[in-house]
View (cartoon, rainbow, N blue to C red):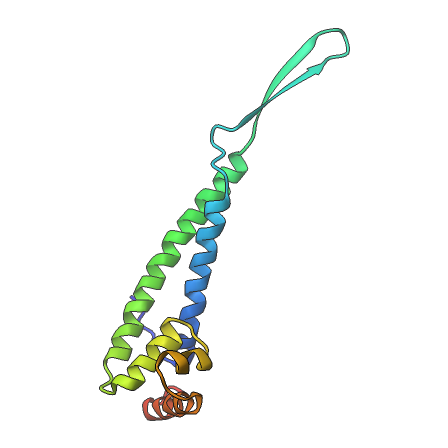
Length: 140
């Protein structure tokens, strides 16, 4: 579990971590499974004999994919722990409106404008509530 204190930077970085995991998942899904991939190459030796070679490819790609998968598992665990810490932090506040703004802004990664629209408030109200929240909590 991440024991570092909550900060504005930590809240703002959560969405970036979600994107990093999504990109890694996409990268892995686009990598071919190369374990059994082989090319058969027919060629001439120049002396009238046909040479048949089987070129095994994919060991490098396979290693890279496995390394990405290990990295993904680690990042997913870190993301899950970070999510729990942030949700617990946000849920500790009594003001439901501010909690809702914090969730949309920092967990969902929405802009101020998108947050305002989703929580049915003005952009200036969202900005003011966030400013007051950070002043009150000392997370500036």
